[in-house]
Image 1 (cartoon, rainbow, N blue to C red):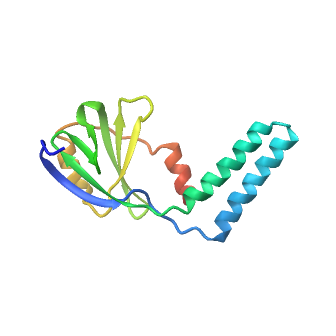
Image 2 (image 1 turned 90 degrees about the horizontal axis):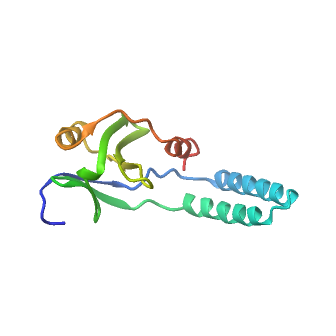
Length: 156
């Protein structure tokens, strides 16, 4: 990845971390047990197992601390650590900036299984990022994904 020019780079946590108290984990446990009981009542044992696994995964992911990631705007694309998203695979971008809650760069990809890539801006100036990106890809307003909205609501 050394054969292109880095125009701007910054570091940020890979996601916004919210400290989760005991109440958050109790809530996950209660919801999980509720769906587990429902699955048993309906005699859907596969769903019951999936509910238990899903509840465990949610609790495990909720306790995870974010790592610091390096982001770069380059002459060939957007680099996230060692992964490059080339401009020719991206349709457009949008900067969703509403501090202190939302400070994200949305990249819309042409790929089916990864249509939107959300990149945290950290403390970087969003206008500087926009200045560089507008030269390479179209700027188009993009709504925050339903998943991101739900995750922020539940402080995930």
